[in-house]
Length: 214
Ligand code: DX5
Ligand code: ZN
Image 1: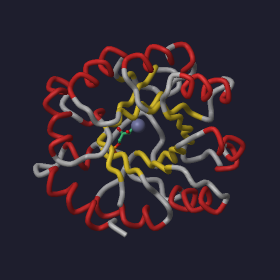
Image 2: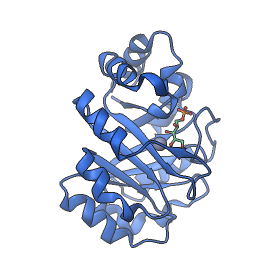
Image 3: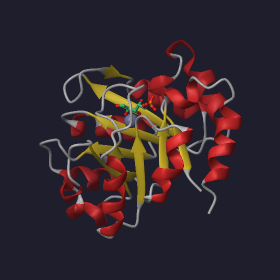
Image 4: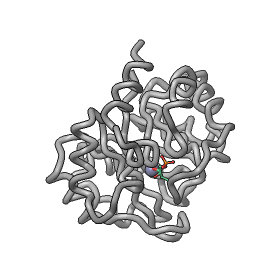
């Protein structure tokens, strides 16, 4: 059964606490927090203070997605703010094994994200060091985009390459493309627009859990 991680980038920024509570009540599994530095992606989003505030608001695992050129510069801050999982991008110039090691040393799970155009070969060397691979289904930076049709095959390719951890996808995921993604090996679906713009989030989450129950 798929794990559903609502992306608060699509939530009402003036009512984040209520939106997180709404997601928890609706039966979502994780909370996905996008962090953007305005360099790695042409957008800015959230802060360690928001992660800490959300930590106080929910007991759901916080899945923090660092879209940052230099995630190492603020990694400890996000970890102490309460991140349960921290995902860094394979495209950065940093020392991935060192960063993944720091995430583990803080007791959190480590993820590596790849943009739609980045081949899976880029992350194969880190399979043993990452509890999760995030296959971005859109170019990172903004919600509400269309799912990139190249990515389902990348999810299968990760499984064929022997990856047995969580595979998360993020961007453009809706009820009508979710099952297709899970058939390729997806285990965590990040959804922003499709959840927070949904007048009955609870019913949608129930349907999506149901349709992916194996
Ligand atoms: C984009 C973010 C996604 C986004 C979700 O860079 O990483 O989490 O908010 O997108 P939608 O709204 O398409 O589900
Ligand atoms: Zn994200």
